[in-house]
Image 1 (cartoon, rainbow, N blue to C red):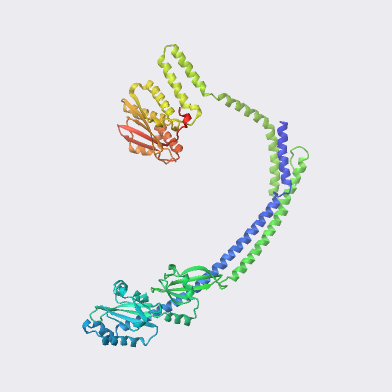
Image 2 (image 1 turned 90 degrees about the vertical axis):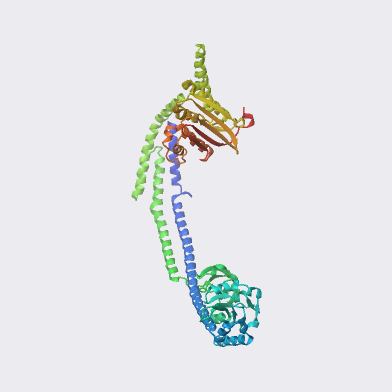
Length: 602
């Protein structure tokens, strides 16, 4: 008792000393660290947030500027291409060209072709930028206004693939690149091509097709007029057309869309925004590469945020000082009073006045704790005596399993002396059943021992039910050493008797089979009882363990065994049930093969 009281006092004294000492675990230092930590986090968060806001605003400004430039240039290019489309429509109505397209093949001569060429060239004289016009009759007789600066691919020209998109336009203008691949400039300069299928204005029959190449110098002139030097105009296939050729290396398929796409890139150490989109429905793509500048920086917002940060820092410092003066210092005063109280050698209440109600509450709690500790010390010995008596009762209630074995053997010898051989055999079987059943407390046993448990159980059941139960075994020799959870066959056999054979009202058979396959032990219990309905089987095998099925009440051994096997194997698909009403029920368990070592197989 005295030793325990000193121990309690030592614990309380240690707590008082730890509270009193202003060490690295003190409240004051912890509060200071927390305040500084909050200040540090806020500053870092502010810097990050400010950086994100500035970068985002600059990016959005650059994106808006790029969008404005690209949309303006796109409208210019589209407008120019539309004017060339109208020019191509006018060319199709040129009289000498119409006469050439209508003429029979036998009447076509070089004079007629030259007249048509000169007629087309007269129309072209009113505009700039058309590099050549190539017209094909349906019989592939061709005229070209600038024929000798082109190299022709006659293999492609004699095919039909290059005409398909033009014919699909039904006389409308179809814009493509590089003369639909039937010809290219000798200097490899790229061209934008406007193609049209030509139809006779009277008969509406198709009489030929026309290709009009627009020189990229048209686009260069537009860029010069708009003073854009950070633009690259390309074909949708990656062909460079006009502008800054260095930027062509940044083109990819994501820009070949009518919606503007944006990407970041670092060029010569400068962070750049690459913007691009397709011009209307034309095979032309505009790329703009521009650096991020200071434009768009929200200086007013930055100034407001900095002012708010300064205000927060001032408030944090004030709160820290307030906590020190009004919380931590009074706590140390309370601790000092406790220390002085300790020197008296008794656990007494303290009466130091506290400034705030919360600290006064802490003082009251301490005084209440002193009263409670004194009460606990007084009751400690009684509690220890009660605990000792309870432990003695637990020890007295422990019964060793061999007492059951010895009792059964004694009754068996008495029965044998009295000439009751059947009673002796029954008791011997019962004793053997419980020895195997208990298995020295083990949870897992060899299959051979589990089979012995089943055989002893059926022997005992035949004493009750007579010869209505027959048993048969097909146990593979290699399976006897396999380890299984204890008592997984006996509940299934019991279920077969009580819910199968006995309900059928006639003699029945229980057959147990085991074999190994694909590294798994297969155990099958089959009875010739009343069988089970499919709905009943589904409920018993249900994997929803949140609520036990109704069938578990009438077949608890079966349901519980299935749950045990699932838990033992670590998965749900380990039990199969097959049945036919009035004929049989067969339960199969599939367990991983865990065999005994060679020295333990006997």
